[in-house]
Length: 83
Image 1 (cartoon, rainbow, N blue to C red):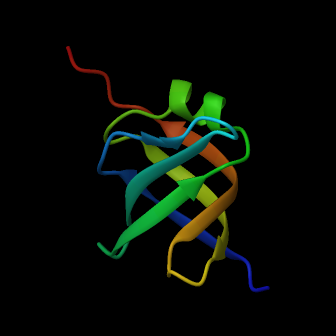
Image 2: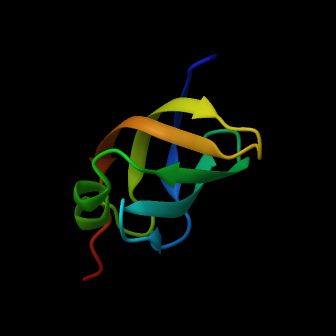
C-alpha cells in the first residue's frame, strides 16, 4: 500500500458519516489547488475538535479504491479565527 503526504487547508466542515466506529469526511485543498475527499477514522474525535474551516493541515495516509484519501496521521498547523 502506497502512503502519501498532503499539505493543504480544509475547505469543508468535517462531517460525521458513521458514529460507531467514528468516521469523518472532510474536503482538503492541497497546495496545488486540487480538492481531495478525505476520510478520518483514527483519532476522529480529536480531528473533529481541532479542525475548523480554512485550517492549514498536514496529512499522511493512503488512497482507497474509491479514490478517497484515508488519513492515518494528521497535524493541524494553524487555524484561522474569525474576529
